Length: 265
Image (cartoon, rainbow, N blue to C red; front, side, top):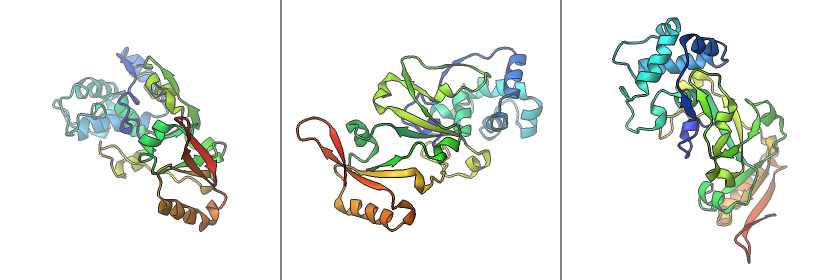
């Protein structure tokens, strides 16, 4: 499960932000937000771990002076007064994206298995493989918020700072990505696990979930995948009784058209 900020699209988890309303509106909306404990933790991280020139903030300070802490984190840290990372990535600033990167994990899936561009980008230039899932498996029904389709648009979704979280922030992408025909499994990240998890190149947590073998129904070998790698995968699945139901497919270059044909072995 990857935080939105770790994806290759700089707009991930980064909706158009409209300035917050009155203190009462912020407090009312955030107090009924199910993710409030994680939001408080993210604010504390922004103010205490990254630092703030005006004062030192403890977790108790954030809880007891919530509105002041929220507005200080958003207005001061987002202006870059106390950044510590060498990479000036958007998620280094306290913002809506900052919170999303510490609360939400995303598993990206696609409804197509023969797109030439995706094979080239995500599967080591067609030398890798694709895993196919049974999307009706209970794992995808019960994990997080379930599997949902991504919609593509010219306009970014809009959020009023302090407003309730809306899933559309993570299910709307630019029309440039339309060819991916993406579906997403969204799930809240456990705060404690995020603290102790290893980090990616951008400093974001790497959170791993176990996927039951019964949710896997096929493996597709890339056009350029070596015979040794293919045979090794077949042996791994064949020697694991929980994976013996998996079917194998081979991607092939069409003889006449610019397309990939996927055929069962």
